[in-house]
Length: 150
Image 1 (cartoon, rainbow, N blue to C red):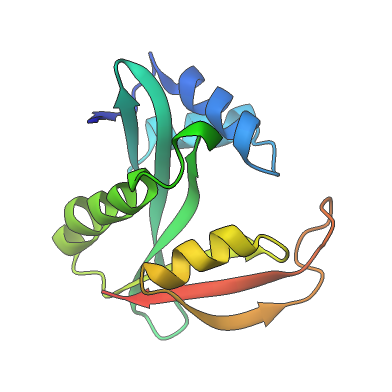
Image 2 (image 1 turned 90 degrees about the vertical axis):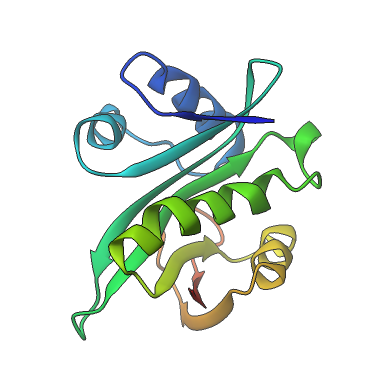
């Protein structure tokens, strides 16, 4: 497996893989945001085929602490359970967050995705909060806020 950077020339690949695998359809503005601002994205390729990706941003929580917020992480179904998602998380943690002195990673995860929840728990994430009616256009509408100390 090889890792690549997100660029204005390949962001359409990221849009396609996100569309195929995630319950949320992201706008053109989201992808412009990823390619034009200081955000972290890493693409995972096997034989020049995009099979996974992660996109993060740095947030500041209410206490003023810097947090890595995982906006999207995905792996194509046939390539799951081969450690690709784990490697993407590790890359984000190593390259993006340690350089910025961030101590926590955070994400929102829709209720009902037991496979993803098991993946995150195995990676060291814990449920920090439960939010009912978080998503307005998805069923179920609730989500977990997952966090991991780095």
